[in-house]
Length: 107
Image (cartoon, rainbow, N blue to C red; front, side):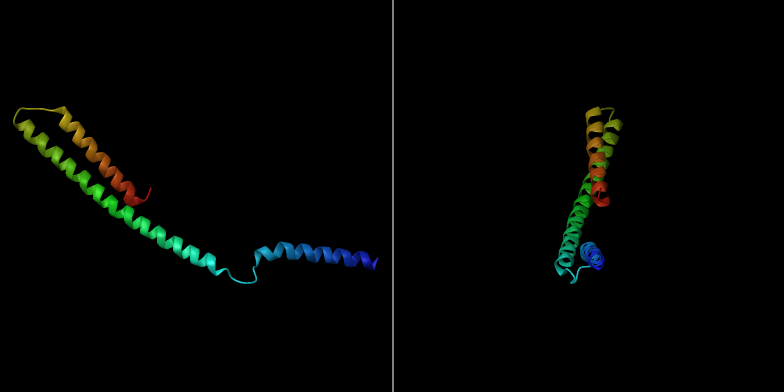
């Protein structure tokens, strides 16, 4: 009967160490911390590049919208009309501004 209790206790202690060891490592994993820091720096650099590209796209889109408005304004006052200029430049400008906002916000 004593042998049975010792066997059960050994079995329970083995289960406890098998379950608890992965939860509580004996030494800290410094490589995981370094990898996390490196990934964080890479992520910040990527976001910075995307932010800069977003600002450029936003500026190009705004410039295209202003140019489209100026051309349409001048053509209207000279009694000429071209829907290609109006719709093409406005669409390209709006798409560039949307892309710029997407890059800036990080979607």
